[in-house]
Length: 115
Image 1 (cartoon, rainbow, N blue to C red):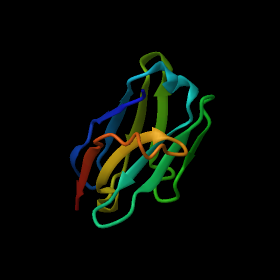
Image 2 (cartoon, rainbow, N blue to C red):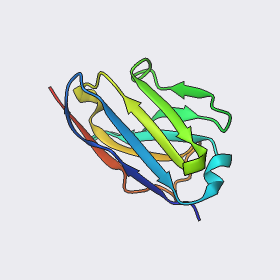
Image 3 (cartoon, rainbow, N blue to C red):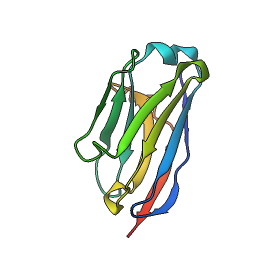
């Protein structure tokens, strides 16, 4: 059964960068389209970025040009490179399939961007 463990979050100043990782527990990962999502304080969960099994990517409008999604199927790991962060990026970040399996949310990793 697939489980996800997100890591790499932290406190960063506006304009800074972070790299998030998501370790999947099963090699089924390599056969799944994957996404990063985030839950900002007081808001609903948002989709952030997508990567298909063949490496095709897509991004939400608010992060386009600043964030980069990638995957390492040999390591069953998903990544999110985040650059030029701003306070509106403050959220708990999660990985999941795309579309998301609501039964598979992990604990996420907190990203806090100070102004």
